[in-house]
Image (cartoon, rainbow, N blue to C red; front, side):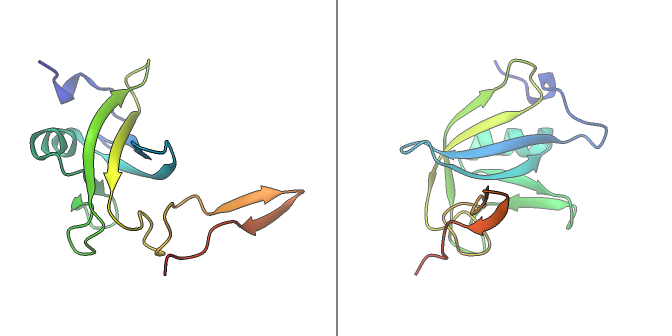
Amino acid sequence: MFDPLSLKYDAAGLIPAIAQDAGTGEVLMMAWMNADAVARTLETGRVTYWSRSRQAFWVKGESSGHVQALVEMRLDCDRDCLLLRVDQTGPACHTNRRSCFYRAVRDGAEVEIMAPMG
């Protein structure tokens, strides 16, 4: 059986987790998880992150309704980064956009490439 403690965490006990839409492949967001958040996510199927600012668990969509249901958790080759393939309900970003990656650098300028969802 998979053991969340087998992952490589940073000095703060955290590992980066990239959320990707399981259907489209779109990268939605990046957040942090600790071993307990990894375990909770696997147990419940609801993606649970660790909020560094609040120092508390953050179940994605718990207050907003913009839930991330885990489809598959993947580990990178060094075991120090996670890819979470999810079914995303509503926007993933707190700015009400589908993805947190809504800015791009094009021809040396930063441009907004995605509007908030209606």
